Length: 265
Image (cartoon, one colour):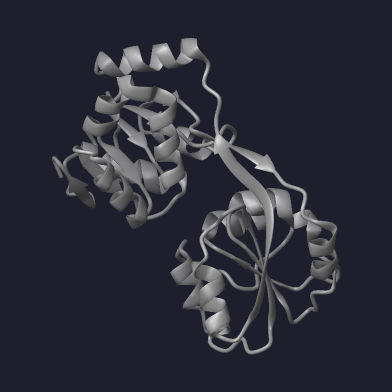
C-alpha cells in the first residue's frame, strides 16, 4: 500500500450538499470509497437595506473580509463599485473569489482568523472601515482583533447554517452500514457539523460516532468532540481543502504518524 492510498477505506463525508466535491475527488483518486451524509445545509440571507446602504459607501481604502467560501457565494454580489480592498480567510475562500474575477488584496497562507490578523496590513487599522461578510452567528474573534487595531467594524451576514434534512430510509441505511463496520472514518470539519450529526443519527448513532475515528481541521472541534466523549482517533488536517483532509486520512491509514489525538491516537 502506498503512502497516499485509501484502498479498502470508506469515509463518511458530512460537508453541506454541493461543497464536498473536492474531498470526494481526493478520496476516490486514492482508491477510497465515499458515503455522503450532509450534516448542515446553507441558506442565503438577504441583508437589511440599511446594511447594504452602508456597505455601498465603503471607500476604496476600506476593507471587505470574506470569512468563507459561502460568504463569497452569497456576498460577493453586494460589493460596491469601485470595490474596496478585499481580504480572504484561507486559500479556499481566495480561490472562490478568484473564480469570480476578484483577486484578494490580502490573502494569508493559513486558513484561520489568527493567520489573517497576523498580516502586516492589519498592524494599524486606525479609522479604517471594515465589513466582515460571514455566516449568521459567526465567531467574534476577528471583529475583536480588528477593533483592537483601531478598525471600525460591521458585520454583513449573508447566509445561515441549519441542520440538513435526512430521509428516514437514508438514516436507516447509514446506521446499518456503520454498525456492520462499513464506515472507517468520518469528517467533522466544524462543531456545527458534529452536533448536527449527533442530532440526525440520534441515540442509535451515539456509540458509532463515539468509537469511530474522525478528521477535522480545527483545534476547537477537537475540544468539542473530546468533551462530548469521543473515544477514538482524532485527526487534525493541515487545511480544510479536500487534498489536506484526504492526505491526513491517508497518512493515518498508512500508519505514518499523522497528527492524531484521542482514545487510540
